[in-house]
Image 1 (cartoon, rainbow, N blue to C red):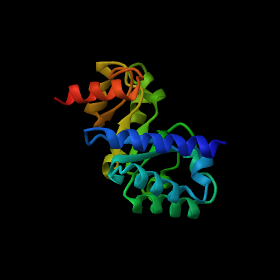
Image 2: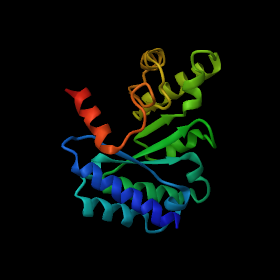
Image 3: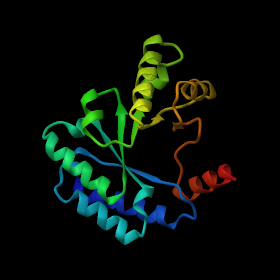
Length: 190
């Protein structure tokens, strides 16, 4: 059942993004079950073909826990997805099974700093130090960085000062239906 739900979410996201009069990307979270499915690359290719969405507008997000296990097979899967032209994002970085080896072994385009660090950054020297280390490491590896859970202008400014260039969280808006959200994004771009 999780395969069917995941595939449906992927297909709907690609169809929705393809309908936008914008070059905005769409991000889709992949579960561990989806990632381990031998048909994942074919499923993604089919979703792109059926929707007409250019692959560079699709970003697939995985968490560190997805990568546990057969690392050679994981690398093959990630490289095959990259060969399709999609971006790969490492979600919730720093909270689970963080290994710097992942950053060397796997072809990530983006690291997403977990919201728990962002939440504590203004009150915790340790959280801020971890954010600084992640951004410096990511920038030196030429991997884009997104900070999750940004809820205030102060957080956004401090993250930007550390070299973070992309942000998501309630500071930018609450979850909304796609049609409503896209109107907000296009209005902000103009």
